[in-house]
Length: 329
Image 1 (spheres, helix red, strand yellow):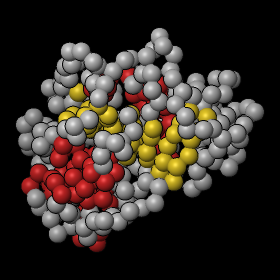
Image 2 (image 1 turned 180 degrees about the vertical axis):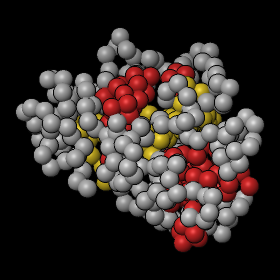
Image 3 (image 1 turned 60 degrees about the horizontal axis):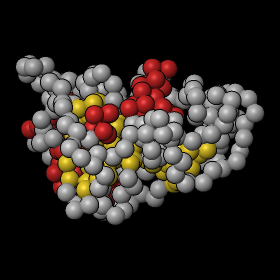
Image 4 (image 1 turned 90 degrees about the vertical axis):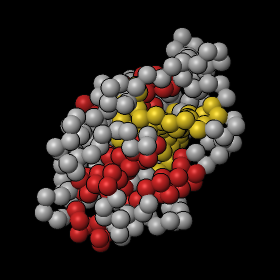
């Protein structure tokens, strides 16, 4: 798939940018290769200029992410921070802390968490992509609703500093990150691609996982759920705590000094669910392996996920977050 480095986009509408990966209703696993411990997948990075003035997404005939419009510009941008207007700026919290208030399902609104970030803290949000088209391929695009979901998230993250973005090599995750940037009002889209942010990160034996995914009465999401909460299928998956901590310490929050101040990672449900479960000590009811449980278990909704906040002393706090009304599908 051709990437969008160097293409200039406008701020206003995300039009047909779409696509992401996972399908929790499908018995087929995501296209997520198992990533063994210690493996580093090279990242590609680029910064797009979103400052075109005509209010529509500019087109690239060679890139599936960009919808058609007029007068495409191929000038690449720098990665410098471009402040948002002062009227929209939300200063960091330097007095009494903003209280984070989760809903009855355990999810805090992403805007509430963002507003709680103190001046000496940095945050990474790890989110499932927005709603995608019903077919599950690497090229699956976001629906119009998915575009709106991502831009809604962006509007909740408006502040004086630019965000940086990371996503997998799927159209839907890149489009989700891009539309969050557009929703924020950013004039640039500094981003990189890294496929460690997929379900394969937690997979020890992909053949065993595929065998379980296709067993009668199972699906890939049900297998993951049962592994998280009961320890079954341990021969197919790594230890949840060890792999989650490795992900956090290597890719998400390696150290305070190396973290961007604000970052969004756009990923897939079968990566989000294990990570959120670990960060919340399995408090979120993703137990869909047993639908007799009360209250009824649910799966990760679009643009839901986790926030990891680190302060200058290296202390960490984390929340399950929702980007729209519900954290559950």
